Image 1: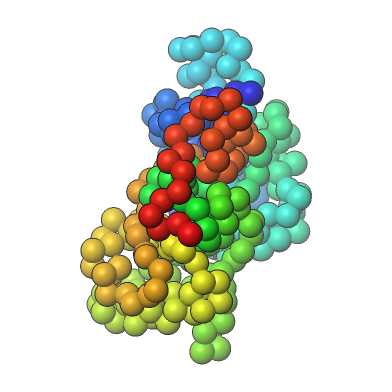
Image 2: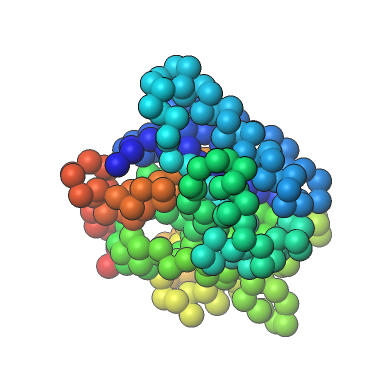
Length: 279
Ligand code: BGC
């Protein structure tokens, strides 16, 4: 099985991609980033993403070996993904709802791909290569950005499409108050935003009793401003892979041996086993 894969991370503002070493979680190419076409329409996004794969494959074939042309491709996307169909569209065109998106990407990219939700990919990457490497027990990753993405992982195994950014709090969609975009939109101070975050994470803690929360999204680089203010039973820590988490997770999920925090069957990999935070 290949230990290299291309990861493509599609977001509301940018589409990013790189070649990944699945053993180490390092990028083997430059990270290429293109703006998401305005309106987030399917055809336009598919075209940009497949152009990005072509660029990465060309680079690979030129620099490594022609056999690398068959390198696996993983794509992550900000929607519920069921059997290759996108079932929601919170921050992209509504045309994605009910669309056989995986097939669209596959025909444009002229290859099979692995297609997943963006937060699920980021969660897998953080437990495989990042903040919660090898963590056991129930881990909830939240990405605080335009919306809130979530990944629920138990003993290194992902429960896909949890969409916990959309739980209802005080009659409102949680992400409309607790996403980083809400802080920016209302011009809230860290303390004002933390009040909303506290309600959000307390609710998740009541519902899921996680062993660990991981907080990703661009704002996680300012974690010192808000994470220490939260009062929770479970530890809450910043993600470490920053903007590469989606790329790394999408790439890892192309290979079942790298899709969980377990050691790959042949003993490769870098899981550290139980962490003190685990059960
Ligand atoms: C979407 C999720 C996505 C998250 C982060 C939410 O609005 O519903 O599918 O994971 O945003 O992009």
